[in-house]
Length: 518
Ligand SMILES: O=P(O)(O)OC[C@H]1O[C@H](O)[C@H](O)[C@@H](O)[C@@H]1O
Image (cartoon, rainbow, N blue to C red):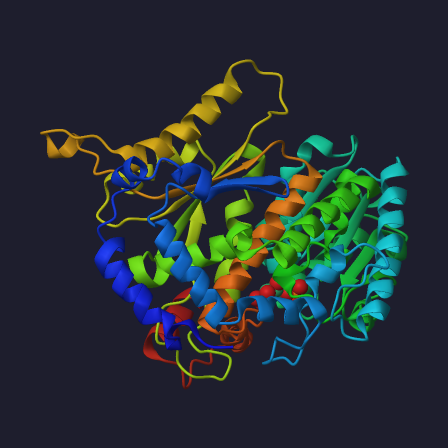
């Protein structure tokens, strides 16, 4: 296991970048290699990917694959899949893939505890999915409010919206994440206690925002004359004791080896299970498992998560691209950029390696984006003509789920056109109207937006993040960077209630006084 920048392959890549990478022109690359599309595109489970409009050549990929071998990426992958404690700063295994493993399936090299854990996973999953079916069949329940933040919100909120076409009629799903009371207020408007179920989703059951919202929701429930807290409040957590202490007795558990941003596959997915039902949730898991198997078994040159992770490192460390723009060309994927933001930036937004040594190269880029075509009319200007080159990742869906004639062709034509315009550019004597071209994009295509394809797409994204994290030699599964702010907020909350600004820095003291002013 070697850090990418400490391998013998790294300087080879640097030399290759200087010789051919920096000045690579996509138009010339296509002209030189008639098989470029075939070489750089592939069908993985549920996801077709065209990586050919990226600033690399076959030789680049060969060198990157050598780099992956030198860093032991497949060995690191296998260590994760078999349950080694690869989250070394928290001494935990990283087993979100177990949550989508079919019952009884053993993989070569599994640690001895895996079969028992898999049985536990399926026991909880069955109970949770049966519960979801119960809620779906209960006509008295019309509204489900998921209270959670970060991984306990972004996954279910994104997926419920993505799979809106499959949502049970008569059930409305609401998501309350922010401690800002406006959000709770908006969600509760028009709801009735007797027809509402609250899912209190928190891995730790200590997250301040979620606890504050859960307490307020309980107070609202009591004010509205709600009777049966046990029936109306459900805990989704690894800390069942804390949920009980709050008076929540129906709980679905999960395990410390499921990171928050990887938890949509666990009990945290209950809102999605209620929305789409047991069978569809099973398809969602099956899609992810198919991608896991692809990642585990496909040869490196045809292993999509590996190829995408390698491209990510090539872009970040050689081309120096500091961000990636995500453009889903499907309105239902509107929350996907936010979901991917947490996945990549919380996983790989680190500046030290596993041993605590400072990284010598940059790690995670900024991820951001909006659905196409909206982004085109807002910030795509910069992608086409700005001073910085930013790779674009287009996610398109071939089939539409709506009856409106002509819209899908227009939408897909726009997705294609953007990638084409970025690559081809356009000469013009007037500099304002000139498009430089040779700007990179990837094109991921689903046949239809369904539970199975969404599952596969998300697992693909998880694994590509794993690959770049492995190359950088960082622990992609902790998130210590969120701790300090939490601690200081606790202190400042007390100070906001008092006059005490002693010991504070000048700016915080000044702002605090202003915030306290009547
Ligand atoms: O699920 P919880 O324990 O409430 O945590 C919710 C979120 O908050 C934390 O601060 C982490 O940054 C996230 O990774 C996590 O998903």
